Length: 169
Image (cartoon, rainbow, N blue to C red; front, side):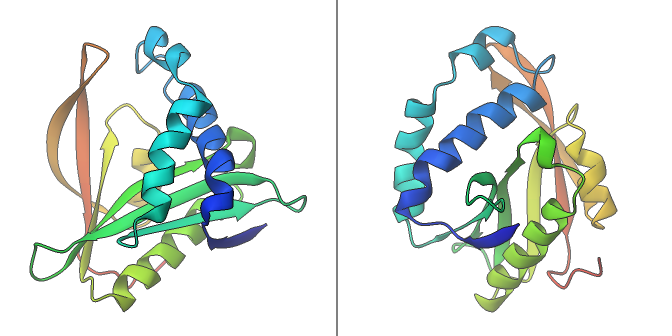
């Protein structure tokens, strides 16, 4: 496995992981109708803008065959002082979970955000998502609960926060 910064040639691979992992991860949480409506093409459009945006930190992980099997993205909220970072997305194909890739992703992303002056980082995660335990294992602390509506369904959203970008993991 190889982690590196994303480039425009990765957009198709990122979009595929994004759609496939949403359909794997959120089945039974987000309405099936919404998950089934996701397309690679629609995700590619969004990722074209994000990959081109210099304020975004996007990393991909490739398997030994050079195929993208996961990505992570983050950014700093420039309008907040001290600088606050956000882990915006982290997705891996289900078959590649449990191999320590997520932990490596977070470590590399936090290092990049720290180099830009970030002091704390937060992440928002659906309360029913197993990723809550992942963030807790990485020493994130529950910070708040809010909600989000997806396809007409109101879902609880947990906000976790790392007070320090220096992870002890």
